[in-house]
Length: 249
Image (cartoon, rainbow, N blue to C red; front, top):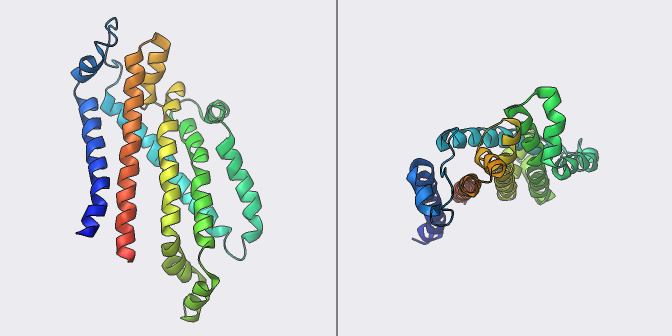
């Protein structure tokens, strides 16, 4: 019963955000119903070029590919620099990844477009670099919090270093690592809207068109759906983290 009560706010948040997202993406008239009184002079209340569900799919593809790469590389580098043979590389790796985080995504797009062209590829590169730091930092922090005595005990039981990492260290560090993954994914969902500037599509397309045509409703369409997307992703990952924690208890 206690477990169900602790899960209920997460489930309610996810269900509410998901219902709102489906309503706003599916019912075309809802935008006119919501904003006709605020913006009576607007001619178009719904982004006309591409359906909102198609934009959602494009946005999800950008985020999932870039975040997947960030998770693989970030966790891989985090494991590497916490091993005995890779600790000397920790400052250098931290510096390189920090540059990727502080470098503006728009600047990364501008540099990537001449090399890989317009579309999704430069957006994925920018999002990958931008989402790398939280995952790397949390992976390093989580693994460094595992007491050396725990590692020694695992090795004393006959585990190899790889087995100790997989069976002992990563499970103990999983909550810290998951927090970094959630932060990275949520950041990427918001940042992915800039991909529309170089033809990558996604929920940034109504925002860019709205800015160009002075249509506030288009801007709100992209912004509200992107915000709900982030809430849904955060709540879903929160539930996954909770379930993972239960399995380890």
